[in-house]
Image: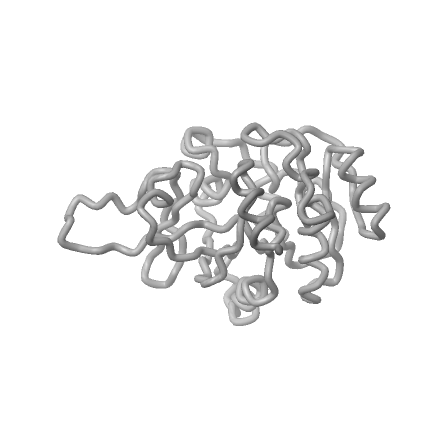
Length: 237
């Protein structure tokens, strides 16, 4: 499921921006289909323009019936009556979505015999100081088993002891959910930490859900700003 909202606060209509001859959202949809990991791939959108873009290209899209605060809510509405076990949320602004990263997220459920994991997500190590401090980059810290402890737009961990070189990880907004965890998220109200940071993954932690983080070396380019789009154009060529 690829949630696709037309109105983005930082970069309005970013999903319809041209990326080497096709809109960003269509590039992302095609990348997800190309992985050949999924029974079905859908774009879930509130926008007739995005819906038409996908369907006219031969893809599958669903119109979202309601306004939603985040992508997880939009997906939950779409899958509520579907008979599915695992749902993967691929962000609409990730045209460089790759097979190996998604495969790694899905594999955690194959070995989870106790069904301890509610959802899985990706993280990539970052070393650039500007990126670590950038509030548009969501950081994550994990325990010794790679379960998420917290997500933040601030640098975490804070480098109070400068003699130690802590590892910093960027959260990549790709999730694989058990359907039950996703529907719980949909029905539970937003709490203070999520509202403060504007990071939907925090809601799962606030309600005691377990998020398994999988490290990947594939950084890709998330298109949040016009500068990101320019980088993506160069990378695509």
